[in-house]
Image 1: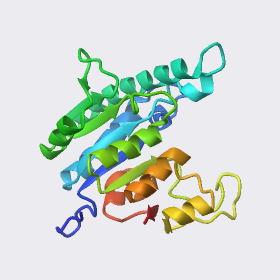
Image 2: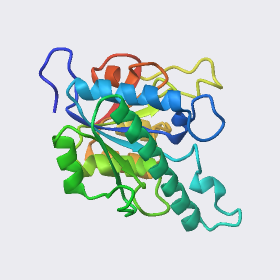
Image 3: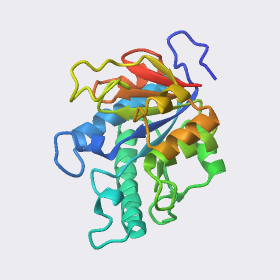
Image 4: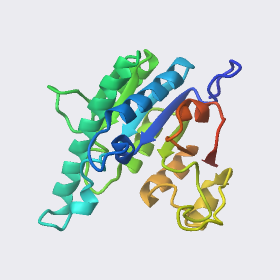
Length: 243
């Protein structure tokens, strides 16, 4: 579904995936509040342009389950701890979004009703339709699934038009641009091409689900001010992975 207004967003309803590491800013761990405020302002700008926005945020700035599993913790317990970290990040981003002038709601796949609403598809869709930015925390609610997979799952459930993957680089490259100076950025790929070339757009489970649901994935850098709104308008540097 595309916007008809000139200069408006290409997609009407999107899911923005923000890594936990993006919230660290210049810090080595945890939350960097000026960075969170910048991301919140970017989300609010995109919201005011007419897009309905859901957000899935990772937890790697606090704890990444896969990285601590096996160090005295089984994988399921470690992943559960990582999912709790995503709830903390979502609550912080919710408050920053509200301070920036837009209504927001956090819904968690792990029920914790004294802190935020439990996730269910229909209430989440109603919040979006009523003009709220919806933060979807707790991953899928199950261990062994990444927040990338959770993001694509929620996008499919909520009938989003695209997944916006906000990263530290401005798209998908032929190789890691931090290592290979000759790496070039793709403007557009199909899901099949990205799989065949083993490009690390998302983890395998997330990418397979995106292909099955025929969900476009727009990969862009969150480091530039206004990056989310620009990507929604089809502007700026980005890679689109689409059927």
